[in-house]
Image (tube, rainbow, N blue to C red; front, side, top):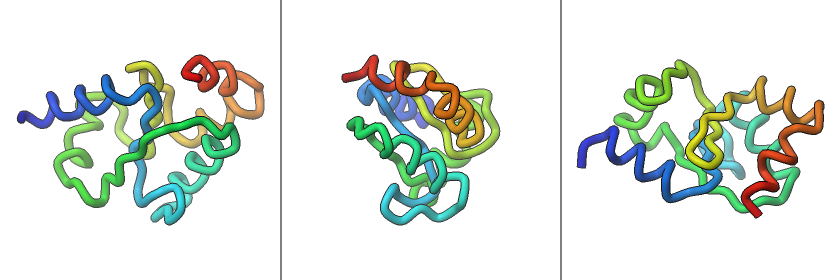
Length: 103
């Protein structure tokens, strides 16, 4: 499977997916930690992909998404953003609506 097809399939098959460094229970960078904690706050079901364990995803997702950094949160096939954007959406009470759309 080509890497862009793999990424597209992951995003299409998971209503909420977080591409991050590490896991929600063991984040490997501060930005991934921040993003995971924000999503966990809402107690929604989500999938995560540890980009440190998949060099192809780490290399090609930024090209696919036209977004250079990690973490990346995708909801309903749409890139929401990284940890700073998630934080702003959270404190402005907008992230709840985006995530609750999936319940």
